[in-house]
Structure formats: C-alpha cells, structure tokens
Length: 255
Ligand code: FPP
Image 1 (cartoon, helix red, strand yellow):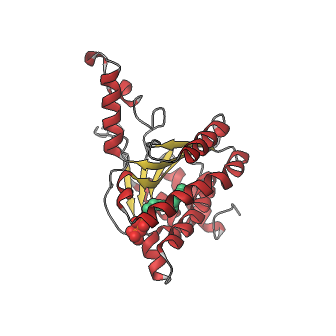
Image 2 (cartoon, helix red, strand yellow):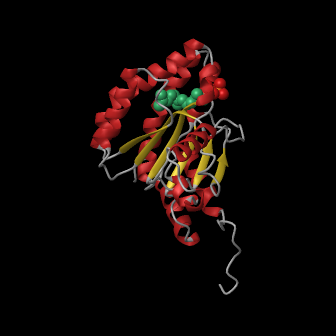
C-alpha cells in the first residue's frame, strides 16, 4: 500500500478520480496553517506547544505532498502582521524556525527537496538570515519537491517591494507586463498555486500570495493545522479534482 494512506481503497479512489476527471494533479499547493493556538487550548497546553505540534505536522504534510507528486508546496509560517502578537509568542515562533532549519535541512536535502524562502529577511537576526541562506544554497539544485517557506511574508509588502524595485531600476513602464512584473516578486519563477488550503475554519486570504492566487482554487476546512492529516489532504484533493478551472474563459463548445 502506498505510504500516507490508511487503506488501499483510499489510494485507489484518489487515483481513479484523477483519471476519470482527467484533471491534472495540482502542481502547486499553498497552505495557510491556522489553528495552532486553538489546538493548544483544546489540549490545555501553552500556545507555543500548538506551534511545535504544527511544525511536527509540516514533516507529515511534506511527505504526503511528495506521495501525491505535488511539485511545489508553500507554507505560510509567519506573516508581516504576526509581529504584533505578544513578544513571547513572536520570539517562540522565530526560535522554532531557527531550530527547524538547523535540524531539518540535512534531511530535506537527502530527500532531494529544494528550500526557498518567501518574504523579508531584514527584521530577522544575522544568525537566522545566515541559516536561511545556507538552507537555500545547499538545496538549490535539488529537483524533488520545492518547499517555499513564507516567513515574515505579506502579499502587500511583496507588491510594494516589487513596485519600489521597478522604480529604482527605472524600468520603462511601456515594457512592463505581467511576465516582467512577476520577476520582482519573492515568488519569481514559481508557478502560481493551483490550490490554497486554509485550516481551522477561517475563510480569508490574510495577505497571502495576493498576486499569485488570481486563479487559484480554495479549500477551507475546520480541521486545526496540527490535526490536518492525509485524510484531510485526500479530501482537499478530491474537492480540487471536482472543480472546473476556466481561467476566465468559456468552455469550448466544440467538445
Ligand atoms: C496559526 O496558528 C499559525 C501560525 C502563526 C503560522 C503557522 C506556524 C507554524 C506551523 C509553526 C511555525 C512554522 C515554522 C516553519 C517556524 P494561530 O496561532 O493563529 O492559531 P489560532 O488562530 O488557533 O490562535
């Protein structure tokens, strides 16, 4: 039985859905990992324990993404707005990123995973900036899953920075189009996400990938991020395979 599935039927059902709908596997899934705090509260634990459990689940979801042949996985780990959380929580999240990078890079590299960072780095410590750079550098030629970690990321900030750099470089406005604009984004070169998953019941984008989600499909679930498992991913994918993606066009009537 393929790893990540609780029974063979589940794996076969998903495979047959793929074939009967002849809709391609999503190339890129992006996840808003919400509900760590509520998970901790539910279990009578401090919030940081919820974030730790959330990190444990990242390992699981990376494995499931690879089983499902997803090429790009983007995780919203820390937003530009998250700085306004209590200092102890901000500190805890930053510490968590630092320890995850130091602990996991070797293993991710072994699995042929390419790590990318989306977001600002200037507000992070020199040490953390170096760790991020190192993880990106070591894994840059890997051709397996691309894992984009959005940390100190905000969609509006990304667009603003792009605009500033375009002005700084005195780009001719008549030569600027969607393709050339995209090169100024943190996500330059990464295909737009096909599917956005948000856990924990909220139904909003919260400043995530504002440019890149123009034609993404959305899947919302009440499951809290630390509990989001292969069954939830299977449900999200099944839902995605049912969607008809037209990208603003109409169906070809000759079909
Ligand atoms: C939302 O839970 C979670 C975040 C702030 C981002 C996700 C963070 C992690 C999975 C851990 C850190 C990841 C890395 C890579 C360092 P919440 O606190 O908003 O939950 P709540 O809405 O239930 O309070």
